[in-house]
Image (cartoon, rainbow, N blue to C red):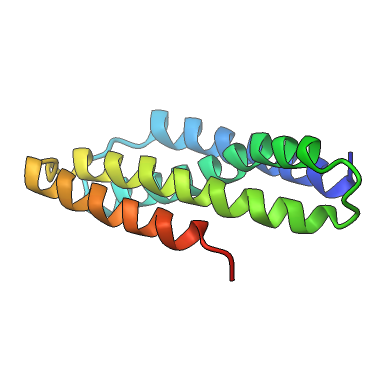
Length: 120
């Protein structure tokens, strides 16, 4: 396992500790506090979800020597999934989760998936 993965794991632990501390110590009464919590959640989910994707890509191509490229690919998909989760929580937090907003977000998310799936 490369050394940068240990740094990513340590960063994930720190981010989740910040989320737990922020969620239990700060009441979500203002827009700013909710936005800060959702931003921290986005980064924590991105780094956490990218680790299983990295392990999947690494087992799929074990002889591939550029491991940072594999992590960048896994980071892209981790950010994509965490964006969907965080944006949906944001819709729920600000009471914007109507049927129309949910359908529009799903269409946008599907188009983003198609764009990310294509090779450049």
